[in-house]
Image: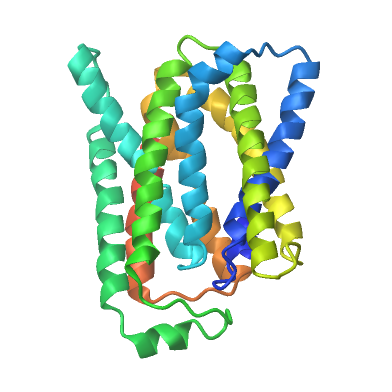
Length: 291
């Protein structure tokens, strides 16, 4: 929600860059604290974890860009279908390696529900009447025009994040999760510095002030992102539940829908809520039957 507040201005292309900077700044501070507490870190660890870091950071940047084109209530569930995609990939991976999977039949159906929900969102978003769209968006004071980018970017996030999550689970089999987290945070910090330089250069060219009121929301979002990441990396280190860990984590999208309506005043059509309900139901089912 904080990231949405910091990035939703459609005519400000610097916000996504500055959001990466805000997250990188907070993560860099946390990495420093972790190193001071004795967490092992080296250039070798950073480079080994780099492919995962790049996938995570790329997906997050796409997520921040998407916030200019679509409601949080829609983008968050689409992005977090990555959990279902991870589950699907993990199932095939275990089958290929001959590892037995004891999953409840409903869990397979839950993966299908997530895919169906995203498909329905795409159909409803593309087919919505422009006048009805404008009418339901009045209260939020933000207008989102019909655009292929509106769903294409969150779907790209979903695919890239799923790849990062699956690769993360494999790397954490041989790497300490605290060291992996610090490696990710330091990489994000470096990326944040690069993004700030790019944003500063662009702001100077466009003769605009690089700082604005929404930057406070970006810092709040960076703090929440860092705290969530600390729990996230430890959850993925639990090898026995990796197939269903990501979908459970992704259930936070239900909270995003609630906050989008209560705080951001987003209003969706009944069809949108139907598609979201199908998606979130799939995520919840995977969590309920996690043994």
